[in-house]
Image (tube, rainbow, N blue to C red; front, top):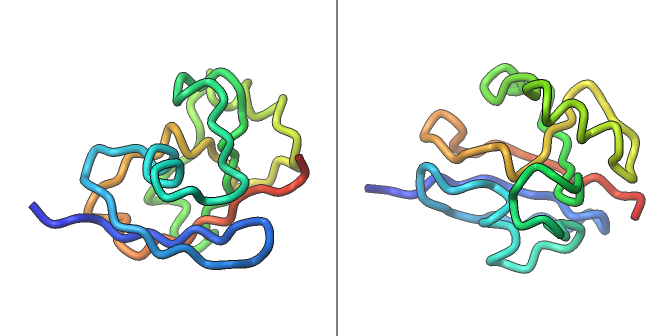
Amino acid sequence: MSGVRVVLVDPEGREHSLEGEPGQSVMALAVAHGVPGIEAECGGACACATCHVYVEPERFRLVGPPPPLEADMLEFANAERQPTSRLSCQIKLHPSLEGLHLTVAGGG
């Protein structure tokens, strides 16, 4: 099974091109590669909003809007919530997301 490549742009503007396995969360991939700005304090339990990212608007429909629990948690995020805000712990890699660009939300 081949991996899924995504690009995360950290708060300093550096791009991190990472490849993970289908089903893996973007948060787990980012933490494994030390992407700055992804704190993941709750370890992926959708309970802290420290893995907040902005999905590229052109492909947001592939990721979809946050479900109610995640939407509630985004209200507590340190960075401004935007229409394409998601928690990276809730985005699972899938072949349709190949090449997706995500920006790590700043404002710690």
